[in-house]
Length: 172
Image (cartoon, rainbow, N blue to C red):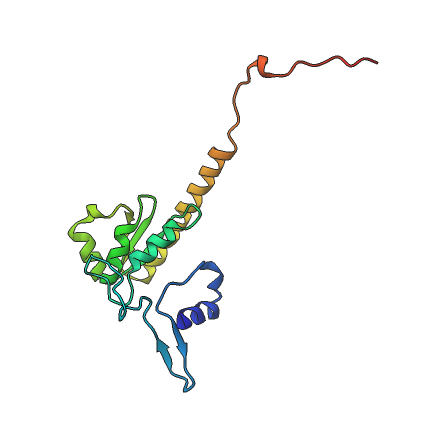
């Protein structure tokens, strides 16, 4: 996490991430970066059965934990490696999967795209990545505004006169 968090802070982007899920790391006394496994696979397996997760981290379990936490969440998941296939299987219909085209996760998804419930938006290079990601963020933002408007600002178009309380005369 040290490297990722350092880069995000340097670029002024850290505030846009609610959490970072990666192998924990630190710089030791000799100035060397030390990386530890996210899941302690030496003591027990993380239990994933897809066969695509590395022993040190099942990203599918992380997605399940995030989905089970409080609040209504929509996920945009970006990936290119085989280890990104398991979490893509955990995404919901309201989520988005952004696999990098012609990379291992793209190949796995292409073999059976019906297993993925999320909407799939592939990308090939940085320019396309940016365009697709910003479009999805805009879509989510628009959907949330529409949901807020239709859910919280609904007003009846007509009111039955009998529902209006009668005016009581005030004695003077």
